[in-house]
Length: 67
Figure 1 (cartoon, rainbow, N blue to C red):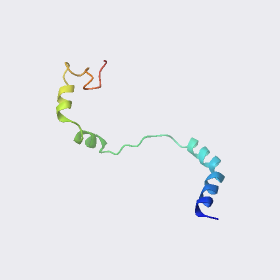
Figure 2: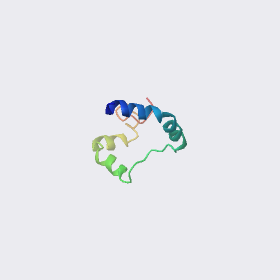
Figure 3: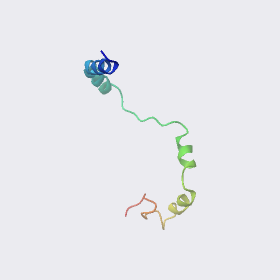
Figure 4: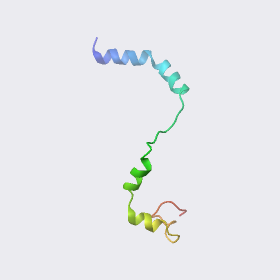
């Protein structure tokens, strides 16, 4: 028996158990503590200044307001 066939059989044999275990675990999204720093370091500074003004915050360029 090849390794591929053995792996497929093992995955098929334990499918019900894995589905049950997935349903019993909480679904959370983990973000590291420094995620906000990462976002800030990759943010376009010109866009951040423009989009924080009332005149431009609703424009399609900023993407956060109603269009």
